[in-house]
Length: 511
Image (tube, rainbow, N blue to C red; front, side, top):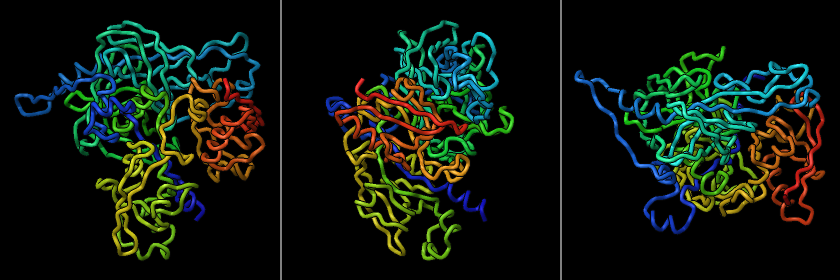
């Protein structure tokens, strides 16, 4: 029974699901009128892309991947990220135990970790991964975990030319980062439409893991909207494309390409007990990754809006409470089990016990699919939810907002954006492990943000900010925003590391 409720709890998420603000300037929106912020197929226009269609058939009628592969390999790069050496007396290096992170199945740990601890003079730590050029002037998309904590980023193209990359921005919640190298007429892969992918469709996985020029493998789409993959990335957006194309270490940030030669995903994780490919690979769909990098390019940070509902797959809700859900006749959809503070959905008339079955006419069968759909919109956008309430079907219009209740887009200079961190609620297991009853975990840190500058790392558990206890990401963001508007713009943060060590930080928001 204990394990059952533990499993149930992992499916319950606060859907502070995010939005895309791909076309931010009003003049550009006027020029592009007719396209909405959810028009994912056109994210490539932010990077001046023009589509290509390279699919062809052999004389025997079989798919021919050669043209798509030839185009893709020149646009997939090798990424070398270097973290400067830390003092051997640094608390971060003392007593650190080696923990297995599923993301390290691809990439390893650029931050060093226990295996890299050395006595004497500390050495720089180097990690490797892949990336995809998405514009002829040198924008590159990769995974956040590939370049996380990196002080120097070097990019090597398929022709062995090398560039020093600038980090434009990161989004730990989707594990996507945007880099820029100074180049002209570089080969790139145009965005495709991941919504049009079908299970069973052929795809290519392209990576450059060992700086030995790009490598191509082929497989099919095994599943779409896949979430709940293992224990990693909990609390973050999960709506992956699953493929059986062989992917191994160092392929993080590489391209998932359709037979038209279009980018339809960013390879991010594999499900493996050993770290080597075991038949399951996962990619962030371009419907999400394209929106993220377009937001970063335009606004400096990803635009996140709030639907503000606590949700479960309907099948999970029925197993958890058969009596309470006995009158629900549908077997697919998302059960609303509660609301976040200032919930736009609640304000619009959504009620506890409702089942969400579609967003703007697009059916959603589970939590991952709902996140994928809402993730495309920005604060102030309206979405139409199809709701099953008892025996009745309803349509409810919801105006999406930020976690602070605003309908305005967030600029990088805004307080939460400049802090450069993402947050998630603590699991019951984590609280028990650390012996605490409240707190909020840092889910990821932007290398360009103020949290990173002060040494606050992913996994740190915040207990108090300015002497106020915190129990939810919304509370943390509200305090950060309020402090930035006050006379004293300093956050005094207390908390504990994953090893149980008490830490204190001061983050100056005025700088």
